[in-house]
Length: 406
Image (cartoon, rainbow, N blue to C red; front, side):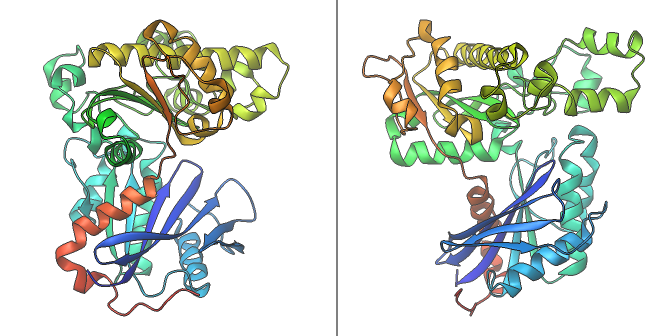
């Protein structure tokens, strides 16, 4: 594959993260990162390219189509010299349903199919669809690919994925999917490269950020995960409730008088750390607070994460390594310690000094379980998968004489 430029887009519920890559000899080499916070006005692109940082204004209104925002974003990147001759964009898509088990080129059929899955991931899927549609309209010559968070988990046994519902609902797609698959795929790659013995063993990876989940991996393949049908499931998150008894949902509707939209907003936006504390969904603010409600939220998060790690160890038949990743997992030493202290019975023991400095290995020498801190890179996985999908068409999709970035 000849040199070219590729953009990886990672839309969240309230932001758009991006990775900039130069494609050389079939590899995606990272040259920059950026983010647009959609909750902060006026909009701006925080960009770092080859160590040079910039804050670039996004002079566009934020509407339901994201069209003007995307146009301004691409114009800033191109004008800043950060993309050369852009020919391909890879997207993170949260839900692939039962159809998408691997990355795919985004054509009309694929885009319609991705959009049809919106009810399965109403918080995230619409942003991906809007971005892809806007780019197809604004930059029709740019190839697009989609990488799915659910794809990593298709290796799970049907016994793990099945709910105890009538077969007609299972056949309609009501099953456990698992999410954060791009992050777990990256962790599996890092372990295989740096720690091959660990990679071949029984690993629980904890992707802990504003969205949070845990995944059981055996030999680098997903065996089980905390999230199931939706991104609401599993451990509490910044504003999402985590696992909730279905009877409680019925009660909220019947006795609380909540209609579908109000219930959706409660579970996705008013719950989790924010709901328990009544202060914030930001773990850093809660750790700095003396309010007992903040401590309850932190304790509950640690308790549920440790409980889920223990359950996943049961799915694996034991535990060789525990890996922390994502914003909380990588940077919150006190939370790592709180989770691990509840797993001491499994043989987990931390080296306090190593944990405080966020070392890669934070377990103590006597720990029966290796504990690692591994920064994740979902954008790199998106870029790598885009190249894998577009490889046979490299001459058509990627620039053969892209100009250098200055």
